[in-house]
Image (cartoon, rainbow, N blue to C red; front, top):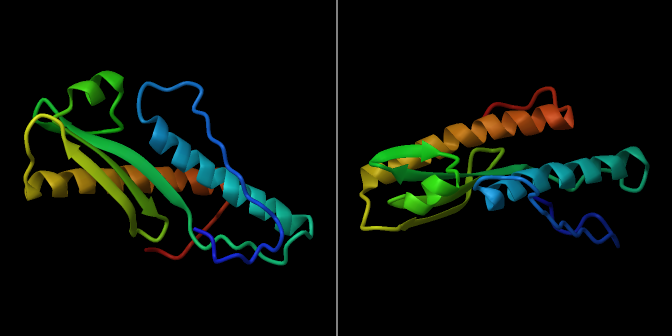
Length: 144
């Protein structure tokens, strides 16, 4: 997300508390923290503290899983507890994976199910990326 240490003597500390959620708190924290970091560096540029932002890409995260044999996006607590497969996926605004962490909770899953979950996660992350762009006032970016 950041380009080396091009922000001098400043320290960036991000502490995320998801105050209200029914699941997906880790992924919500990642997605929201990214907006806060980008916004913070943009403010530093606007106020002359930095010449340019070191941020080169955003990230967003979702949870996906298999519940009752069906793939689901953004599992709530009840779905998460009963999921046969539970997975968190983090992707960059460039469409590249940052993290894929999944577990078969009650058995195993095959490659076809994994591909379906990754496709579902990618679609959810694309929607989150659009929401991040709106929140940050980013009008246009090069297509992935």
